[in-house]
Image (tube, rainbow, N blue to C red; front, side):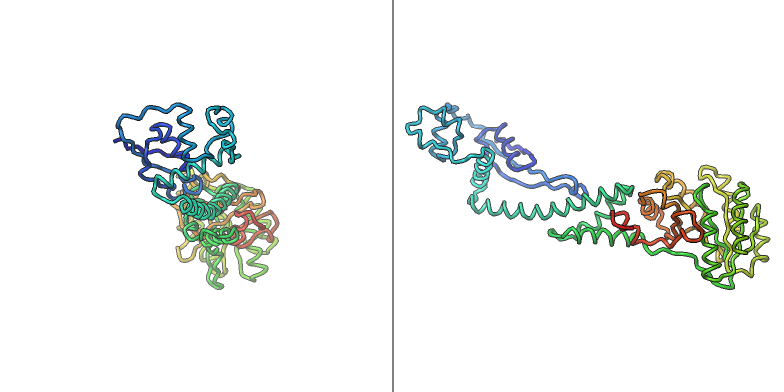
Length: 406
C-alpha cells in the first residue's frame, strides 16, 4: 500500500497532481486546508493537502483510446470534448456525441467535484452546497485580509516600521468579524494607533516653584527655536515668570539667537559653561516659575559628550527638573534608534518632534513612541515664533498615518 500526500493552491490542483503521479486507481483518504499561521495569513493564501492511497496490486491492462472513451460515455455521455467527438468514428450514433459543455475548465471542475464527492462518500449536490458556503465564508474573510493589506501598505508608505505594523494588525485582526465593513476595520486600526500613541504630556509648571526644563538632543534639530516658542507662550499667554539659560557655548550663534529672543520677551538669559556654574544659578533664579535650559547638541557616538550632559542634568535636583528630548521627524529611523538609546542612558525624558513641515511621512513618531515607550509632548512645524508649535495630538497623527486629512 502506497500512502502519499499532495498539495496545491486548490483541491483540484492537488488532486490532479496525485492522479498524474499515481494514476486513476489512487484513492483519496483525507483532504484538509492548511492556513498560514499568525500574520502570514494576511499575505499568503491557504493551500490544500490531500492524502492518497494506492493498492500496489498489478495494474489492469491499459485501455485503448477507444475503450477509454466508451467507458467514459457509459458513465457520463457528456464527458467528451468537441475534438474527441470529431475524432470518434467508431461511435455508432454521432448525434449522441453533441457536446453540452462549452467551457472546458468548467467541465473539468465539475468532474473533479463529482469525483471528490464520490471518493469521500458524499452526495455531489450536498458537497457542492457545502463548497459554495465555504467559498462565501472565505470571500468574507478574504475581504478583511485585503483591507488589512491595504492598511499595511498605507502605514508602510508612511514609514511605520514593519514590526509595529504587524503588532497593530495582529492585535486588531482577531477582534474583527468575518463580514466587517471597511469603515469598521479602519476604525479599529485607527483606535489602536491612537491608544498606542497615548495622551501627550506637556510642561507641568507650578508657579512659585522654579523648575528647570532641559532640552536635549542632536545638533540641528531645532532646540533653540523650540525653547523660544515655548518661552513666548508661557510668558505671553500663561503670564508666567520665565527665565532662559543656555549651556550651548559651543556655538556662538546659538547664544546670540537665544539672546535676541530674551530681549524681545524681556526675560533674563544666563550663560553657563559647566555644571558648577549651573548649580550656582539655582539660588539666583529661584524666584522664577520656570527656567528653560538650552543644551549643546551632542553626538550619540561620543561618550565624553554624553557624560558632560549627564553631569549638567544632575546639577539640578531630580524633583526640580524636567527633560525633553528634541528630535527631527525627518531623521532616519536607524539613527533615531541609536540617538534615543544614548539619551535613555542619560535621563528619563519626554519627546518633542520638530520639522513636521519638512516631511510627508510621520511614521517615525509612531516608531519612536513604540520603541521607547516614553510620553509624547510637543510637535513643531515651522519657524514662526510662537505659532508653529502645538501639543502633539495622537488622533491627528493616526489620521495622517492612515492617509486621512491632518
